[in-house]
Image 1 (cartoon, rainbow, N blue to C red):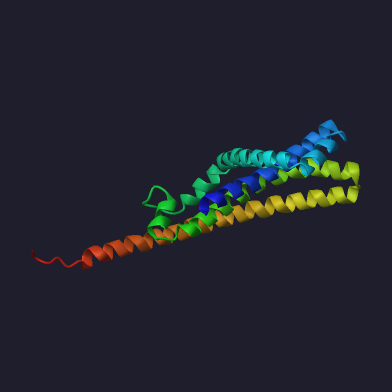
Image 2 (cartoon, rainbow, N blue to C red):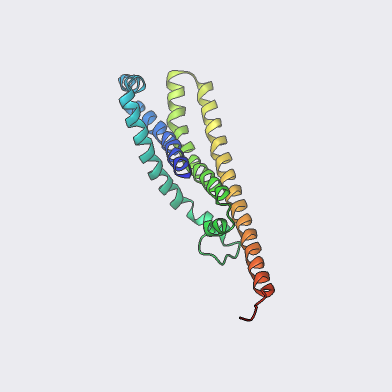
Length: 189
């Protein structure tokens, strides 16, 4: 189940990335690109290929976002002292890794959405101005900015909460293991 969720996560991230790529190509090529889009939407084989492309784009975008947000992650993680090398090891020891996996999935989607919102907003604004009106263009800019700041803020808060809870769990596990060592009765053999 968790592997399927990871595939879906990468496809969602890839769809965001594909949307701004398609809009950018549409701006460059022009109205003749409409036929390609119509064909892709109406043909099942091309839809399967699009899903594969979205998955690959999702992987690439996630890696880029990971590198771009690595400093933030390290800064937040450094606010807490951990004994374990990875935070996921703490959750697995606690037998509640599904929360960690779900939270990490949300963290990945939010950091990618932060980046993609910029790239969706730029061609989206241009296309809404060209094919509709200035009002829709302004709305596109406002929505893109709101999505950028919302996703960025949510990413930071979620990352901070994740490491805060991980730190608390590690402290609890450490305290339990210390109590167990001191309360162990050794029977003579």
